Picture 1 (cartoon, one colour):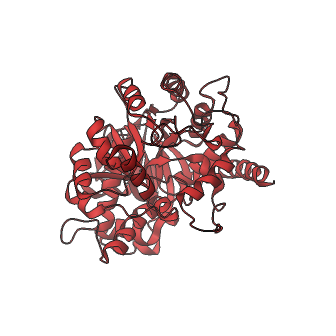
Picture 2 (picture 1 turned 180 degrees about the vertical axis):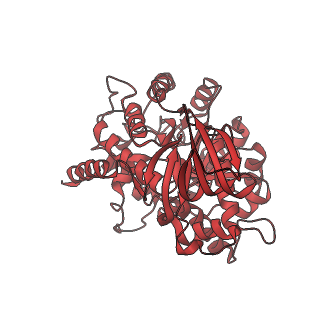
Picture 3 (picture 1 turned 90 degrees about the vertical axis):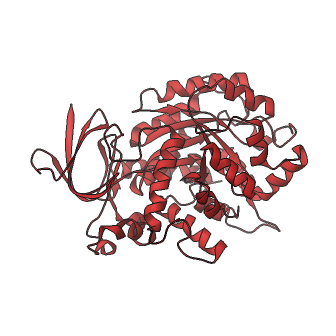
Length: 454
């Protein structure tokens, strides 16, 4: 079975084109026609774009948005925020995780993301004991993805220690903990969980250098010869200092020296890098997984964007803590963070006259597709039919010059311009709302009310 869709305007790899007909078979774009006839295809009004990949997400944290915005006694930071997070996740049941994930995923779809990389470390019961089904939480994440239609790359996280030097886990971390042998069994259950999904992918996520040892990192990467590998790294200055105290090297420097970092890897945050580290990561062709809204929320710092681009580095964006889910907003915050740091404008570009919005969008498409190991990122033959359609009548798109469209979306119209969304050729958002919004929102609200009514 195949279906055809006709778009007045679509962003193809060669640029904006008019009267574009896409034929989709089994969720994949089979034919692309330009200046095509309108007959025999479903007419979709608006400006069609490839959907953005969300390469880094902890979906359960959507439920705690707003809970960590009260000042403590002194020195509020990522580390004090983390204690609030541990308190919240201690209450979550598998049903809660599924309800929160489903609502977060419909928000992603309504706001320009069509695929998510779920960096998944909430594995066990509240007492730290595994569920009877070791992959219970993975199955819940997969169920939320199936219900909403979002593409999923599931990244089970290996977490063994509280800090560098094999520090024992804290009580708040007990739901995360696995040794490498049980972790690899959990990865197998994750593969079973995503098997029913369209082009579902499973990778691995050694949580961070502070949560694994050199040996456990080597064990799980060698046991996983294919698929993506994601790791948190150099997010916070304290993490950098602690890594130096442990090893004599900075986190990214240590990783480059001790792990086979290549195109499979996504270095999440990589906020604090020297020039040597920046150029080193770029040479590996790994992806820097940037989460600008969360990094701003947590006070992490500012990524070394211009130098990374100049070195040919690859990056994508993610929603991480889901404090605000907004695909164009992540791109906008990335550029604005660079403007503040460098006291300049149009920083994330490399050539005179280049569109900042277009460059950010193109890089996030390529980097996200690579990091999630999914055939996405272009409206082209062989790619998943993941399509975001913007409202062509939005005032910010009034210019007849198509070269301004991505700048207008990223820096002005934003997520409110999203009207229609397809994933794997299925329409999941229409008139700006997900087809299951009312039901999944009601379930989410009931879940949060119960969790916070204490």
